[in-house]
Amino acid sequence: MGIFDWKHWLVILIVVVLVFGTKRLKTLGSDVGEAIKGFRKAVNTEEGDKPADAQPQAPSADTLHKPQTIEGQAQKVETPVRKD
Image (cartoon, rainbow, N blue to C red; front, side, top):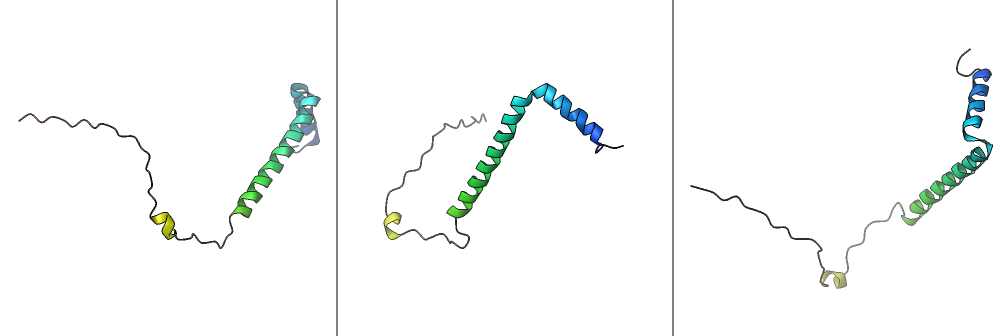
């Protein structure tokens, strides 16, 4: 007579059906299945894009001599005034 008793599971199932309804439970199951499939697909495509033994390539001479811009925003820094 523990949590795995079939009577307890039956009561829990009845309460869940009463709270959510059968239509919402059907759509919930399909939504969870689609989410799992999407997650697996995303994980597989990320692993497929990056080979495990690939090493980063050194930049070519063309890219070294091109000007590069650094984006940022200047901020004024207040310096304290010393009174001697």
